[in-house]
Length: 203
Image 1 (cartoon, helix red, strand yellow):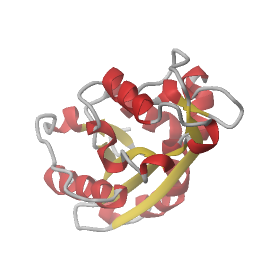
Image 2 (cartoon, rainbow, N blue to C red; image 1 turned 180 degrees about the vertical axis):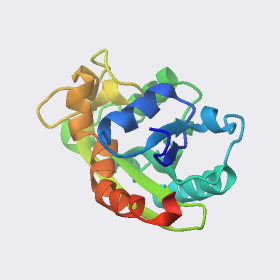
Image 3 (spheres, rainbow, N blue to C red; image 1 turned 180 degrees about the horizontal axis):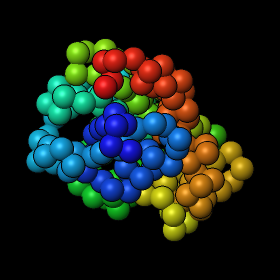
């Protein structure tokens, strides 16, 4: 274990770190979060206008600060009737989760199901301290419901309806991970990550 390379996930959220470990199980790395490398109090300003830009900004900055290969992601919700908003401002759409969901439902009040199309988007970026980067995108299509449902998940999950009629928050974690935008992004970046892991810059 001690001779395995460390791989930093740009988060202070232990749950998110575990999610990465679960979705990328079997990689020959020691997983560490920002807390483990003394960067918990360092905020990287997300100045990009796209998920791709923000994921790369975070991955590159933390990789250089920690001198470790780093995985970072940027994700959000795009709603067709709102011209793709909230998009990169998903987490800043309103001060709290409850307020964000309420604001979105209010913005779509009266809109029929066919006008409530939406998708979750996640871009995951891997950066090495010397500036090598790779990225992958995952999406999950659905629509915005009319009221919150379910007890699992977080954020907009209770109002995001899947094509089978269930809210994302009604899925148990394992089922959600298998279809989620983050799960799909990580599945796509995995072969790239495995390739980079086999080369000296990661060690």
